[in-house]
Image 1 (cartoon, chains in turn cyan, brown):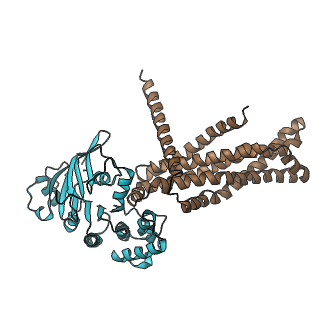
Image 2: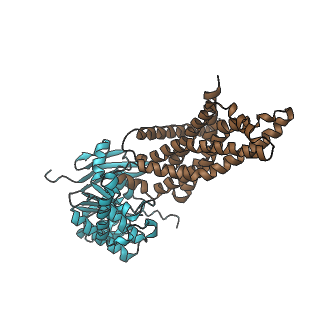
Image 3: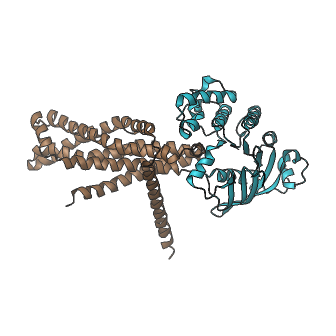
Length: 258
Length: 257
């Protein structure tokens, strides 16, 4: 292939006991491409992301990053993969015991052995990139609002200038205006870095803004995959119901108790 | 027989837990001897585990020494052996009460705090974040705490021994009417190095157990606030029981001829 995929998932399965979460996921992310995986709660979006990051091991299938198989990768290969990735967690996952700038600089100091003084300057520059001033650098993450924590999480994700960015529900838990700010920042940061991005979200506004391509996950499989521009033209009934947010439709919403 | 099924299930669950804890301990020891080693975090944890536990250990051992002097005086006076009070206090403190009381107090204070902190990090995805930032959670979270426990518990117990003996001395001299010079002489006359060393070895074992159980239960906590609360309880209960069991094993290793 002339332009091999940055990230490639082939027939990925993952079960937790009797519960089959992923049942043959196939997905490619090209270099510089931003892909959003959409789907309802419990469809396996987070599990897919954790399998790619190596936080979970798939039961079956292949996951490659830059052509290197990750499911049975050596520690060195996995470390090399993680060194070129950045991740924004749903709840930001900032370290409570460290200040804001130490959180942002964590990957530089602990991952790359940079001197704290130099890393602090970079951390403050990254905070400015996400619209935060240096006055919060020495504050505790717990004293920040949810939206500010997400932005600090984004600054931490981009601090090491990664080639691949992962975003886990970037707009969940914050107001729509701040959500839009986060979306804009994600687009800006991803473009500036020229990074490939994989986002999982159930927020269609966010997916439309962030992604070049959208893949819909349902019952552990990708049931639709195409450019953002084709979402509204698609006649896939599952996608149409999800995008419209209708209760009526083919999606099994597990609402039997209502 | 239906009654055997639950018994077998509990036994198998217990064996699986022992296996998981053993693997966790093995991984911890493996990471303890391979770089990178975060010395800065080890010193920070030594302060948290050791220095901040000093008041509670000092209070516990002080009163234990005082009570021991009172009880042994009242018991030994039945057969006119009151002069053995100082010796009984120092040997009991160094061999048993110092390490066991300090171990149990630190298990309550530090074991719970470690499980709660690491458990919260687990459920808020901070441990996953460490992995994505190219940092091994074992090296960053577990090893510094376990190494700090191994180092600081013997120091805490040594200080606790001294304070416990001081408690016995204060009661002996001020309440029971012992001559201060002869009390101190009796304290050291029959004390052997092995009495102190065995207590310090126990302390190191307890330090390992407390921090390991705190880290293990925190690391494997699931299910939000309730899961963290359960992890905290499990850490304190399991480390307390293991302290009492290992206390017997170490005592037998040292003192059974």
